[in-house]
Amino acid sequence: MLKQVVAFRDVDRAHLLHKSYGDEAALETAVRGIIQDVRARGDEAVREYTRRFDGVDFAQGCRVSPEEMEEASKKADPAICREVARAKDNIEAFHVKQKRVSWMEPKGDGCVLGQLMIPLQRVGIYVPGGTAPYLGSVLMNAVPARVAGVEEIVMATPPQADGSVLPEMLVAALLCGVKEIYKMGGAQAIAAMAYGTSTIGKVDKITGPGNIYVTLAKKLVYGSVDIDMLAGPSEILILADADGKPEELAADLLSQAEHDVLASAILISPDRGLLEATVSEVEKQVELLPRSEIARASWEKYGAAILVEDLEQGMELVNAVAPEHFELVVRDPYAWLGKVRNAGAVFIGRSTPEPVGDYFAGPNHILPTGGAARFFSVLDVDAFMKKTSVIQYSQEALQRDAGSIMALARKEGFEAHARAVEKRLGK
Image 1 (cartoon, rainbow, N blue to C red):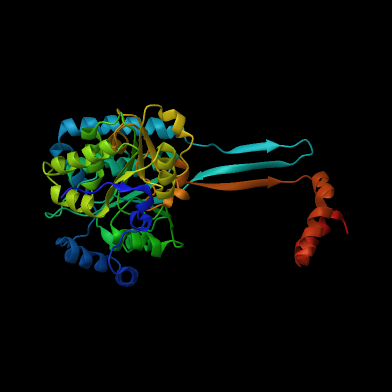
Image 2 (image 1 turned 45 degrees about the vertical axis):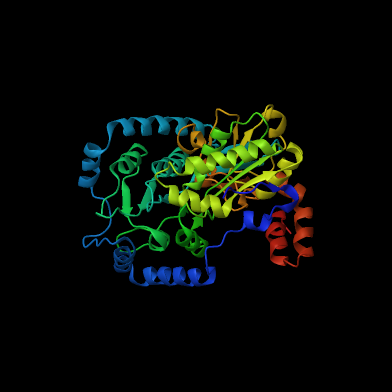
């Protein structure tokens, strides 16, 4: 049975925005236990969870050896490695433009105010494994970190069934200057990077998407380390007018549905015929996919075809959903671009399907999900840098501003603050 087109007034926004992972309280309790165990037992706990969840036993530790890295360079598909290198160049060129520099502003009275931009020292990047190898996630995590000037980038990724890491993933890491790689996944990997073990040094920040266990682990270790965001299942929302092509729109919807059974794929349009034709196309195309079972489950539960009165009403719903990926497939997209308030990334026009951004264009594909685009931004170079203020006052400036500073300090009840200024005035 084909999915029904839903009118704007009948849209269940709660269903679009909130997905069920099951008993999240129980999941968080389980993840908390894993974290505590890794903190207490270190490498042995990581080894035990890797054996239990990934079916691999690393008796000699889970770090990728120099020999494995060298072997990966020989085994990797040269054609894929060339494309990875091209994508890396595009991503680097885009992110270099984001880098901010330290600045100082001398004042005429001898004051100097400024800001230091300091890269983080050691960062952990998580690259998912499981149902698919994520080559792009290696680049999207590591390139901005390297551009920022991070000296130590640690990569964690779940091992394959034979205990290896996909050779192309290792080559991608090498291209980005990542040499410290661990074959570990899930909450145990997040805990090991956050708190350290006898063989894994703790990091300052953890970035990268993962499953619910990874996301909950990042949430729980936050404060001991920084994190980028709490990423959930992938999302695509398309706003299209009558000029949209159903076969193209259906393919775009399925490009996210095939990620995960919890992924969402939503089409909004004021054209009922387009919506109905696209739904039919989705039903045809999903059967041709290698991951059809996943894509169909996603489409059936979290897919939607929504009829709006006009594009204005459609944009209202876009901003309410705050999608991870937003395709703007309308006649005059730049007339509507300024109305976008909440979206992780915007893909403009028929010739810009979402995978262009996933792999190759240059902007980062690690984006806020689950409505978090209302307050979170895409992963960028700033995420790997700290800002430190610089303040220097001259005696002349201190005398000028002393009264104001002391008045404010005493109003707050901090007499010692006021006296720290007063002592320098010879009083």
